[in-house]
Image 1 (cartoon, rainbow, N blue to C red):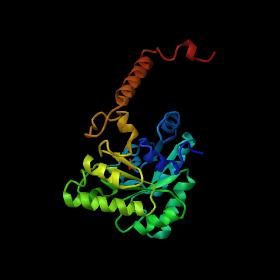
Image 2: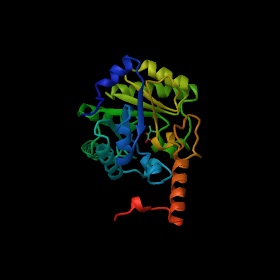
Image 3: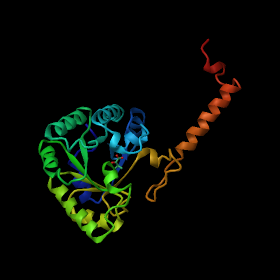
Image 4: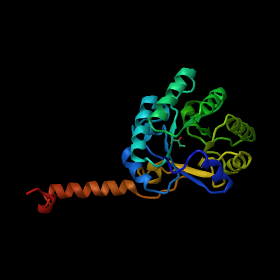
Length: 265
Ligand code: KIV
């Protein structure tokens, strides 16, 4: 049983108690995050970029998501885990979508996340009514990066902001239990958060939301060159790894490693 259940989300919103969510893709980090106080983990389709080195999330598929979800569940038995429905998995008919939901839930997810809303509200309602908690995702939806013309802040014009606000209401009305808002002006995110009865978890959406999510490797500083405005580095993991690997190399070269205590008699 995870520490958090879907029933806690409205309570946390009512109590103004912010939710912390981090992405996680593998057993090793999941094991560490399981020991942390972070509220929930997201097996994001950003796994395609962060772990597999692709340029966008469109390379994630159901097999990839299920494999990583299962690994995260093995490492984090006590965390509420959300798994991303990958690129076009909700646009290929009911059977394909429900098969994908089945795979992710059987891999260990507590909920699934779906990007966008247009043309898929009925499906989101169907999944929620099937007993699977659904998290929405609006604003910058990276699976639509080609249509959006890049990873850009969304909802900047009055019209775009009004559309996003209405769409957020539509998503909540499908029975979604929470909503991610990515890269939107803080004032818009705050308005959506105030109007919706479900928790809104922001990334690049300011401080007025009901919670925050970051990509784990980004907040750990695994790529020091990646510095979007919203990102705070909580560690310098890149230098830590480069330095440790350098010291290992030096010790091997000088035969300082292994020493007698590190060798079997
Ligand atoms: O895949 C992901 O990492 C995400 C977060 C950015 C919210 O969807």
